[in-house]
Amino acid sequence: MYVGRDLSALSMEAKSSWQEKELGYFHYALSQAAPYLNAEGVTMLREINEEIKQRGGLEHKEATWTHGTHPVTD
Image 1 (cartoon, rainbow, N blue to C red):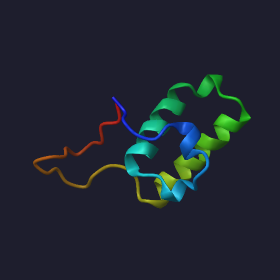
Image 2: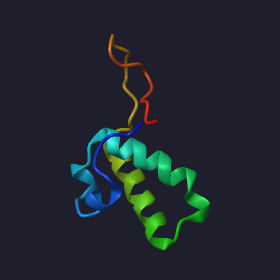
Image 3: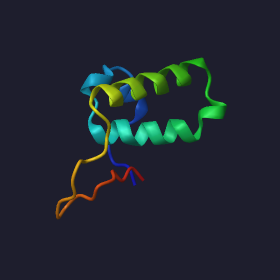
């Protein structure tokens, strides 16, 4: 379950200041709802995708004791 700032709080900030878990969660949520999004939602999803690409993706390159190789964004 996601615990963090909601989308209304995040929409007032630049995507570059979002945490990785926030980008991952809202990327997943908006992607699932993509067929139903209006123009503003599609634009937000595109901006999130661009920020993820600029950061080099969300996946961790190697596993540790506390993190697997894939992010969990439930």
